[in-house]
Length: 409
Image (spheres, rainbow, N blue to C red):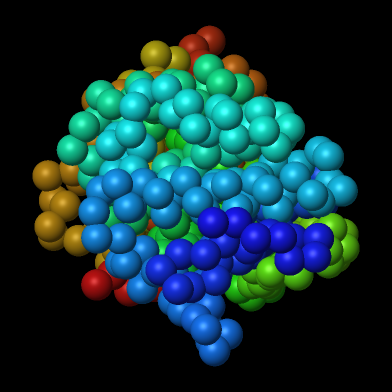
């Protein structure tokens, strides 16, 4: 069913001609191609393109579905074996239905690698993220590919039925994030924070992360900021059946990373500026506290600042002393739906990094990145400074509204 066409191979299926298209995958840190995803392209007798969706609807039985899957993999590996690149990965798609319907030891695939001479460690088997009727068989088959020496990847994570349970069950080497996550992050700042959090969790789970669907420069910057390892998408290179040109697909990561560094410096500067700006306010407040003045009197200057939402004192065990002082700005930011969280008398803040930093490094003003404040579910930045009062260490904390002009919905 395979035919030689010059330096490449094609395949015949149900009157269609199948060709391999490859799309480069880039490592941001290495600033170069580290792999290619193999995609099938089908053409009719008039050489008109047929949508892959229509191609995979053609099999009339499970056996024919398996045949098409194997034919595509055979075609891709045949073509990739002829490329001069002897280093990078080849990403192959395989659906859970096909994987679980076959035998545990996919002897065809092992024989295919042996026949073509392509080392298994250069293959990344992509499992499309969707439900499967036989999770145990899927786990066994993925284990087989790993034993064979291949890497494994979960595709389209973050869409449909994807969840971390599959990550824990299959322990993939690479997780490909669904493009919808990137699309949402492009327009929604909260979605961007969620994307960054997902990447962090996947890294902690021992997985490398690939973000696909990068189509614009802004999306490339979002991918860099999110901390993903690899990127793929039209912005860098479209899939192509012209395989000879693929090894000449450089991406200008030097300019992208320089822009990121510039943006990141701008992002970090305001945090540093907060410390510089409020250090005098803290010095005045602590001087007054040490002289025996009340918390209300001591923090009056802080509380009058339009960005400050609240001030509170914490002891050396991390437990809040007395009630929180709320400013006018803090009062306006309160949402009655979160009223059960407002009172923080005797609250224990030791788990918060800003508190531990202040206790570990007293007499220095510390500042956090923006985070969700548990007392009202709004974004804030916390300034904290540890100081000694009558020989006892305690911490003055001040919450700054991260978006002081933003109205709560």
